[in-house]
Image (cartoon, rainbow, N blue to C red; front, side):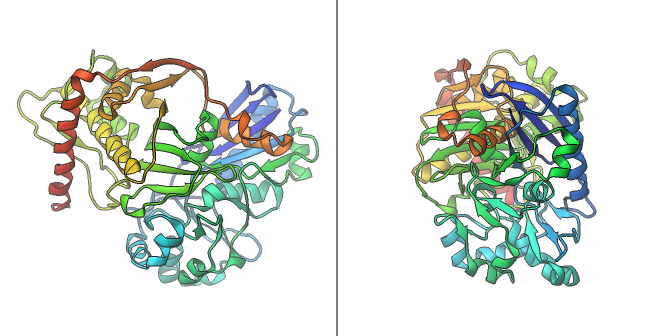
Length: 479
């Protein structure tokens, strides 16, 4: 059997799969974020270890773990976990959705070598600008930094005693030469860091270490269970849903929204604000457009309306042409394609006839237009999407999925019920590391049904998208 651990922002999830990849057991433990100042988002790394212990004990309570041979890790990306020479945590981890280092990110991004070597804009959420911020605002802490680890890699340090990162997560630091799949000494030096402060690198399907005997005994594992490199959350999810070959893609409607396409070549275009990262598998890359509020936008509106999100979307009936009302889902800024940490969301063109249903449709349409922005940005880099699968909580709304299918003029496949997320992908990577299996085990899920675009509404969605794009320019000037 094989275990996947997915360290998310709101919780840590574990799945246990057998050699046929059937899920045998699963467990979750909640996590909370600290927001000590506007735009800040932090977590205590000790909470991750407590959560990991809780889910492992929960798995052990459901079934024997004596047959476990490998563990894979998935996790939220970009977080800066700062350790001293004794591997003690120096301050709470600065998370991916923390925007305090916007000025530092802009300064680094103005240095041409960052885009040239990483293939990406230096976004405020990335790791490197957080270290420049720390040097400026917390110099006493910066002076003590002996090691910087990403969140899942701090969990790995506790599990194995090894300081290791893998390519897909490391690609989101702004320190990795993404084409060469190695740390860049030039980029590290530009932020006052050195290779000595970085963990060693492995591929996501390779062995990174073994579970410490003490933990193996605690959880009922055999000795010598290997821990795979794993993957950043979206790369691991792609392994879980089988998006590992050029032409395959998924759209995720979770808290954030992601359009993720696998690629067998490194083909960056940083100006599009598309993320070009290493995949969690050797000799594979991926491109990813990210919007910061997808289901999060719907949940925000549901809270305002005092009505559950599923109730709001369940009563909409068949897909309609977009109304005059527009919703811009920039509740916490936006990544692709704008790279704008300051813009905020808005409803536009409200009138006396605008009711709750119209506003709900506008929210779904706004996120749909943002996904279309991501699609256009990926296509601008030369990426081709031949097959698109929808995952995440928002994919339970047929209305929303058909709106996206219509906006992209592309059928969208819905997998059978099941978990194909980061924890499942991490378990697959654990299986690869333990058995020597390769990409062939990262199969596509069985498809329950396909939602086709409504060709009668394609032009209406294109026209609405054009108004949406124009509205960003107007709103940007006000914020």
